[in-house]
Length: 173
Image (cartoon, rainbow, N blue to C red):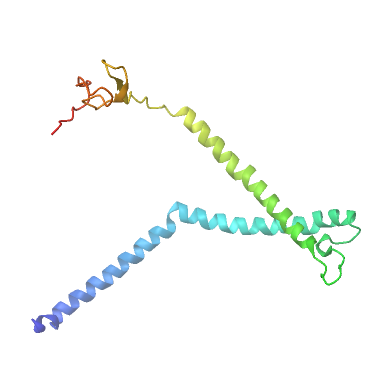
């Protein structure tokens, strides 16, 4: 048996299978990378990063100086509260700038991505034919209570129910 393990032909066969297995794995990895959703995700992340830079520049270059003009400063980013006793000044201007960037980014994502996708889904769902679902319950002819369609006895009056056409009757043991 040990001799079979170290047989040259047997070892060569293992090597070939390993090499082919490795190439198969690389082929599967290539298929994974080139699937549409992976590529779409990568493009979305790159575009999102570029858009984040655009929004940050808009807030820093346009909105903060505009808001800063009301606070009588050139850059709203440097606005602070005056020091009170042992409490150091709080720099709230930068936080407000980041908050404005977040709100603008969320608004653009909502109005240019989420809203159109929801509208398309609504239109698609309206055009798609709906399946009509049949009844799931039936009325007991004796007590007129509602029981499941496949029931053979009424849960309320325990009367034997006739089977409904199109359903299999359950056998009681």
